[in-house]
Image (cartoon, rainbow, N blue to C red):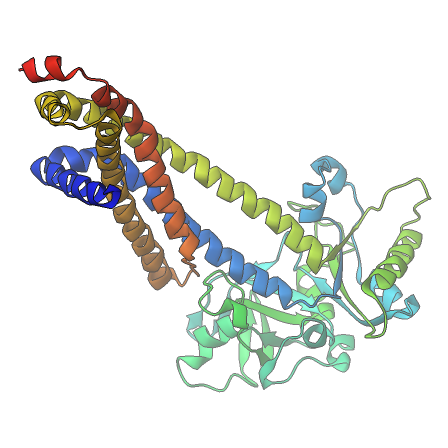
Length: 429
């Protein structure tokens, strides 16, 4: 009987919506906006989250990054002015780790790839790319990053030592300058800024960056010695947003060595080189895959929480509209309520009837919001390649929120309807 009552009440609610289309549309508009923002933004944030996590996982669970400062320092609450006083890391720091650390298998030092990346356009004949990250590295870059050279080769130790103007380009510039024209990039002379370089290799497209659209493959690396020659040394303390060029050192321990042991040895070497006493904190950051994921977890949770709070405002506005409309509906249908009570309808059944009408009203808005939010995510993905994710729980969350709004804001009008005196209701004009 309860199911029959629910079915009958739902049909009555739909009839009410059809009878007052404009009023119903304006009533659910706030619900539609709120659910659209929840589903649309969740799809974008989750897609970005999954792609970023896959990209971080590619770095390898044992890789250690030594940098002047980064997200880890900011998340720990360090003052920005104190971070700017930290000394620059240099290529010599990387060479010292390579020479002294017995637990380390691979060391690569990057210039221009830190918090203030160097960006230049790449030119080939009459074509040019958008500004892309240009950084200097050693011959160990491909092995340290677990990258794949799909065309040509990587730079060699001899080219690093002799400051050769050779470059390995990412898949982004390869696609923009050569792939569309069907040209072999190897041996071609490209101009990076004002200096010409010979292309010797192409790094394959990263699996997690497929369709990412955020520049994961838009880079070019050259020998760090050639980078120094064109863009300046990390020792020059050149002015800039973060105080000039600072090196970032990537360290991969031996397979038989634990990451923690390698981190302790690298930390000890760096502290000695920087002349730090036992009571002084590190003036550099040691970053691992786990630390990066932990920082991103905090950021993503804060963003999702902010999204829910902002969307709740629209849902609250929609809920107030539902309450107002349901109150008007109760007033308009006072005689109907009196008739139903006169023929035996109980208070609980009247309450249930109007609650179901409110839930049906808001749930329809929730369904429309889910469709609109999913459409926005798909359109953004098709237009820009930005990754999206549409998990089932985001749909359930949208429907749950919309139904909850209907129950919460429809309770007062439904309670008032159930408390009407049947005699007074029948007399109402």
